[in-house]
Amino acid sequence: MHLLKSWVTTANDPECPFPLNNLPFGVFSNGGAPRCCTAVGDKVLDLGGMERAGLLKPLGLTEPALNTFMDKGPEAWAGLRATLFGFLGEGSQAAAMVERHLFPMDAVTMHLPFRVSEYTDFYAGRNHAINVGTMFRGAENALPPNWLHMPIGYNGRASTVVVSGTDIRRPVGQTKAPDADAPGFGPCKRLDIELELGAVVGTGSNMGQPVTVAEADAMIFGYVLLNDWSARDIQAWEYQPLGPFQAKAFATSISPWVVTRAALEPFRCSTPDREKDLLPYLREPGPMLYDIDLSVTMTPKGSKTPSTICQTNYNEMYYSAAQQLAHHASSGCKMNAGDLLGSGTISGPEKENRGSLLELTWDGKEPLTLEGGETRTFIEDGDTLTLRGHAQGSGYCIGFGTCIGTIKPAPIFP
Image (cartoon, rainbow, N blue to C red):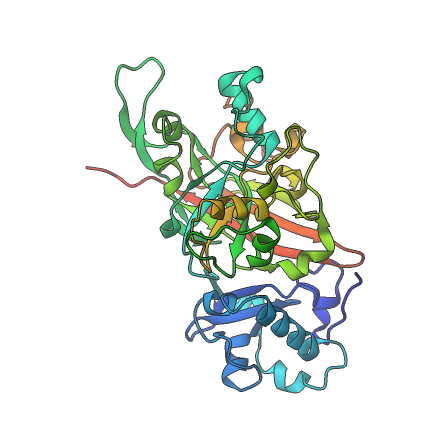
């Protein structure tokens, strides 16, 4: 795939994250009501305004969320993408009509791009699972017996999924020191990130009706950067026997742009060879992962110098989003437009590829040294964490933008 040229000249820069090849979807406002949009170059294209002007057929783009449009399905998604290619492509006869609906990206406010119907987080990265399992159970028992047979997950909280740029309040909860007789209650002291990619379900399924991996793949509208903030000390005390609860429920940040499955199509790659054969319902008909470079930076309070603490790739996942979705629906669980599936922490084989501070500092025993000389084991108040991602093509890239969050002090309890 080559760069598709646009009359929006900034979209033709090989370093631009939003070329015509991309056309991610989001929701923005510029003083009025939020409505749907796409990004091209350094501009936001007001799709809601174009729909009101009669330039686009009614697709629900005037709404403050993408759910109605997503629920219309792959044919509608492909149709709008083709129409936008015609409007924005180099030599377009419609440039004058479309230009009035363009706004500078740095002059608008981005909102949560879709109403999150449900949120499920998975534990589907083998390197991460082995690292964490080794820390707490030893290398010989790092992976639970079921891990190589199915994507493990838990139901999270949709209510605290927030858009990039939203400040995150340090959570409070019960923790118990190893030598204490009883737990205490107070601010989390081991606050962490989890570098993930979130799959956004565009079309749902019926209760009681499983879907194949191929059908699940077609149901996915696109992907967002996702930071599943984690309170490790709260999690350690609470997670037996039912898994994460308050330690994950306080916040999950996502990027404002949903990069479509269509834009990522040239970057498909296969999941790794299986140590154990998967059951037939989880077997993939073709490549289901994507080659997407990912990174995390940390910027301490008062500093202008970010430190890159992680660089990895989505192709490290053991299970694809399509497999996760197929497994989720296999019991008959109904899936909805706007469901969000977190990939699980994306970690590679080397230390610099680890997608959480828990791994990077090996449970706090190996502190990180940042660019300014400060050290970290876990996140401190005022720290800003930024996730980035892009798929690299020949002369262009498909970018996700950023997913940013700054930690504010815990609330004061009486």
